[in-house]
Structures are given as C-alpha cells and as structure tokens.
Amino acid sequence: MSSPIEINERQYPGIPSSTAIVICLDGSQKEYFEEASKLNLTPNIDSFKKSGEDLLVNSAIPSFTNPNNISIVTGRPSSVHGICGNFFYTPSTGEEVMMNDPQFLRAPTIFQKYYEQGAKIAIVTAKDKLRKLLSHGLKFNESKAICFSSEKSDQANLSENGIENVNKWLGMEVPNVYSQGLSEFVMAAGVKILNEFNPNIMYLSTTDFIQHKYAPGDEVANAFYAMFDRYIGQLNVNNNSIIVTADHGMQAKSRSDGSPNAIFLQDILDETLGKNISKVILPITDPYVVHHGALGSFATVYLSDKSKINDAIEEINKIEDIEVVLTNKEGCAQYDLPTDRMGDIICMSSQNSTIGSAEKAHDLSKLKEPLRSHGGLHEREVPFISNKKINLNDANIKLNNYDAFYHAISGAM
Image 1: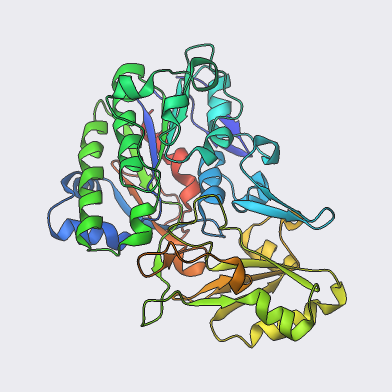
Image 2: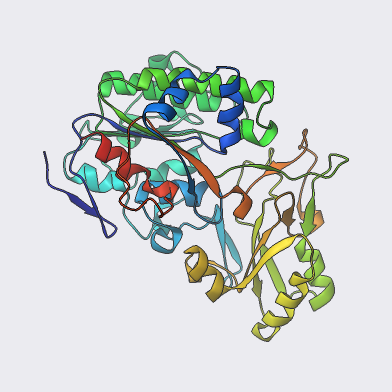
C-alpha cells in the first residue's frame, strides 16, 4: 500500500488495489432513480442502495456542469479551484470567456496527483468542453492515462488522449451530441477500459440531454436509467468501488402553457436603473443551448457604477420569483465562490423559474419540450450512491458531491 496523498489540503488514501470509479450522472435527481426502480429497471443500483449507501448530498453552487465536475475531480468547491460557471465576464476588457481552458484552474485535480504517484487514470466525458480541464497535468506518452470525449471520439489520438481509433475499438460511431447515445458511449467505453486498461482511478461523466427533456418517470427517462444500470452491473466486479453522484438536479421551469418561465433580468434593470449601468451574466451559457436556451436559475450582475449596487439589489428583491439576492461578498462566502469571478450581485430564482438576460438575447425556437433546467438551490441536492458502506465520522455532517473520490478511493483500498 502506498503512502497517503495530500490533495488540496485533504489527505487521500494511497493508490487503490482495485479500481475506484466515480460516475457523474449529469442532471440526475433522486426521483429519476426512484421512478425507474418502481418498474424494476435498476436492479444493480437498487442492490447498491441496500448493501452500500443511498445518500443525498449537496452539489456546488451554481448547480451547473463545469463547476461541479471540477469540484468532484479536485475534491474542493469553486472558491478553491476557480471554475464557477461555463464562462465568466471580465469587466476591464468587456470579454465573456468560456471557462473550459486549464489556464483558469487554480487547483490540481485528484487525477494529476495520483498520476504523479504512479497510478493509472482513465477519464471519459460526454462533451468535449470538459476534457482539457479534466486531463490537466496528465501525460499521455507513458501508457498510464486515457482521457477522451464521446463528442469528439473520432479525433482521439495517442499524444492528446492516450488512445486512438476509439470508434473502431468500441464498435460505436460518434453519437449525436443531443442524444442518449452520447452518455451510453461514455458508459460502454468505461466498461471496455476497465477490462482492458485496468485503471486505478476512473471517472465517467455523462450529459443531461435526457434530463432536460424528460421528467422522472417518463418512458424515455426510464429507458435511460435502465441502460445506465446495465453498465453499472458490468463495472461492479473485482471488488471495485463505485460511487454514482450528479453535478446537479433538474426542475420543470415552464408556465402552464408550456412556454419557458423566465425573468429577463437585463430588461428589468435597464428599465429601472438605465441602460449600460448593469450587465447580467448567465454562467449556464455554453455552446450546447438547444435543450436549455441559456436559461438557468443562477445569475450574477455587474454594475459599472458601484454606487448603484444597493439600488439594483432593491429592484431585484421586488421580483417575486427571485429568492436569493446577495452582494458579491455575502454570496461568495455563503456558497464558496471565487470573488474575482463573480459580479457585484448574485441571484438565484425559485424552483420553477429561470433568470435570463435580455429577452432578445435568447433564441428559444429550438426548445421543443417544456423547459427543464437547473443552477439554483432547488437543483442542489443530488444522489450519492455507493456499492460499499462509507465510514462517516459524523452522521450530522452533510456530504458534498465532491467528496466522491475520497470515499471511492477509500473503498477500493
């Protein structure tokens, strides 16, 4: 057994003797598992719940994909690793920058630190936007690391990904980015990598296309979780330790007529404070907006005139469906966010509403189903399902999804 490894001020066990597997099942709240279980579609997950752990934990705020995936793989919140959205705004330059480049990382990943100690690492992500962040610090010329995405699996090569000819190897074509197939590709690749590469640590991160479109209990959603469960059964071998968690939950965010329930905050602030005083930033925004239209439940507001901050807070507090309105200092302290990458005001909406910028800035024509989205407190609680018992020193302390690798590695020793 190797010595403990300190990562971001936490002591992790040494290199595990079996494989420690963490799966981020994007957009999954507990009701998806519960509804599928009622129809006996998830026997493997159900057995985990009985013999291991079936917990509910907090995800990081904002409850979006990038911040939570990076929290999971660093074991720390955004205040430490710096990734607090899919993109951020730089007031001094007026630039809105995608936060998918490793230059924005402020902490090493668990993968990097274990790799440096000789561990074999395998990572498969659905969307390529996460790949460079997840693989930062790994070397792919030593046959000890693999990292690629379903989305760009046909572009994988030995120098950048540690693997080539992925589609031929797996016997699956590149899936449509807006399909269940993107996540199934992740799971199928995980099983094959486990059997052939035998990594010490493996991370599988899916996409929430299904969860954005279908509510828990829907036939399509149930089929997705049945598919997922079949792969879980194939991963649960050789005393491997498996933890299934999520980056965020998902809630219905539409009106009774099916239209998106959105508060266009930029329009409201322009009208009440004047134009060019405020800038509303929506960290959910990324290149994949077909299923959410860049509407989520978290926003941050920058003020060009700092004397207007209290006026802006007063106006936002008048909006019925905005539940949280905090200054930068208050919000970053309460939700472990980096102060320099958040605006002057932090806002979160109610369970069934979203925050937009200006109405004309959102192309909602591609939303074919009633909007389901995430980002706020109502999507924060996520499952934490383990195939093994977890040693919880204090049962009163609620875990976070970013405790997953600590417990998965502990279970694989």
